[in-house]
Image (cartoon, rainbow, N blue to C red; front, top):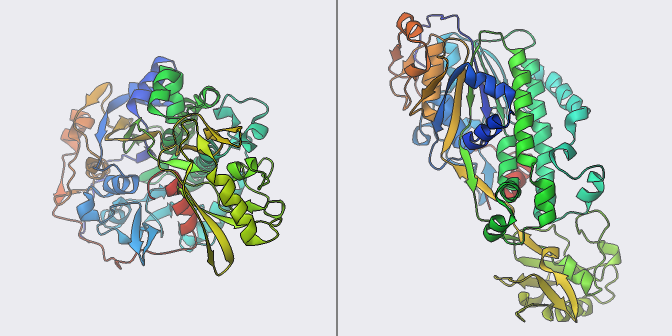
Length: 531
């Protein structure tokens, strides 16, 4: 790697990555007197849009932010890499160029990176790295130095005991939240589960940052919070119904339950408030004159849900063939059922039904189920199932039930019994999606006050950070130093310098498969990033 002589500017930099934070929602919150910590940063600094990478996929963009390079150069192009016919979550060893934490060694500055996207396996750095997989058990190299692993695990355990760990406060459900949640299925159940996960994950990031800074603040601190992205993917339609009325939301999204819109319509706003609290706590950990960059990799917009969830156990129960478990979102009691779908509800319309503990003769039970499901029809008279066939494999006979591609109306009927469509099929729930522009707030240190920046791009962040630290930018970086961010007098005293390149990284070319991959894939599928 190119040796880079650093002229110490006395500036320390902190990057706060807030995935998917959208200027429109931030401005709306400012007008309501909310988000005081972000508002104070804007008031005392410079603001602007941050142009993303197309398409704006988070691991791609955050890697461009950390390297100053486009994906064609840095090599991270998606959430996953295909290997042996499977999607394997992308790993940091595939990155082909140095990131800021690599450049730090040759430029002689120190770093602390916490939960930055695509940083596992953690690399040796002049400082520390708590990787984006530090919250997984059983993985090596989650943290550098590895001697810090036990302390990070203590942080994780402590977060689970926090009083602010729960998610009821993000909703309007009230005191019976646990009972209400236990009865949900499909997209609402899944969305609440992800909300639970990201609250915990963002708190782990906050407390890991506190751990990272307990011995002093390095030259560059960087951390990443993901919850604003995940909540907007899954709760956007409820916010739309709250703000624009149920008519427009129902026109865009089928089967929008008014009660869900009322109870879940505030989740996104309340998560923005929560993330502002975390920003405030983080600022309190930093030295007062730190140059702070708040970034988001993209904004958000309305997304028409394209797929649906399917849950045949509800129909089997109506036919008297299946017993549902109480408070488990429609999961079947295998021992008490004649026929059941043993899998969880998914967006796959092809369902495999198996005989249950009360089946007697397995094939006869499946014949009964085929006859019952074959009679289920919509208001229009159209059948709910496109195909029903009994087959067999190594574990015995099963019934393949294929839902019809179009299910319109409000109800289905079985022998005169009305069954609401929402009992067995609902939209997938990805009602918000990425738009190109993220945001940039630069406050403190040598940053200008009260200014508006135009034309900033994700790739411009790395060279700008290097300049703030007194290190040269690289001429082969796609990004440029954002000189309009800083006070002209400071810029005159610290002119931009360059080296030709910081070189390339040696990569194995092979993504690293781990035992954590199934869990990561489930999260990515739930958010609509992969199928």
